[in-house]
Length: 202
Ligand SMILES: [Fe+2]
Ligand SMILES: [Fe+2]
Image 1 (cartoon, rainbow, N blue to C red):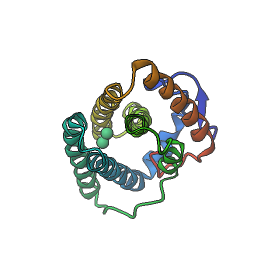
Image 2 (image 1 turned 90 degrees about the vertical axis):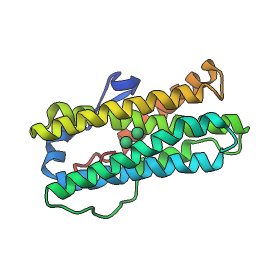
Image 3 (image 1 turned 30 degrees about the horizontal axis):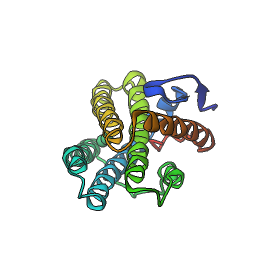
Image 4 (image 1 turned 60 degrees about the horizontal axis):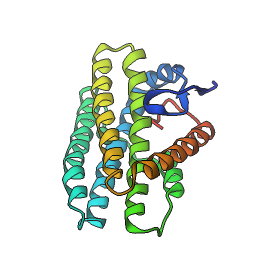
């Protein structure tokens, strides 16, 4: 299937995911839920690691700590959903999306710029997740899962905004938004090349 169409979509992303992805995803819901759970686990770990790395900046600690708690709550929620459907948390897979995005981050810059890089990469993951949750909430058949994904969409959109706003504490509005445009462009090219599968969120 052609997985993307070029159009401005949720949160300004360049490439919209083909909604037919949802049909495939719904048929392999055990694997989608497992992958989703691990995405939440990674979001929590990323938050903890940026706090550890940049603990001397009170704003980082203040804004990211509650997000970590929420991401861990999300992990638990998804594991509970798996259990209620008679499934167990499966294995974590190699996350090509996150790995490629990490490679795009500029390393060794001034500390403030480095923080902006991390925060924009987190915002990017939130934005794409949010786009996929939205599709699931609209197109999935199961009414309970519709609500489940809608709630995730709302929560991750809040995280996206929080990361972008926090980035602006460490770089000018102009610098952050220009760099964000570069992230958007890179991500659009990246998702075109990554195979969209019914057992993966990204
Ligand atoms: Fe989350
Ligand atoms: Fe999030």
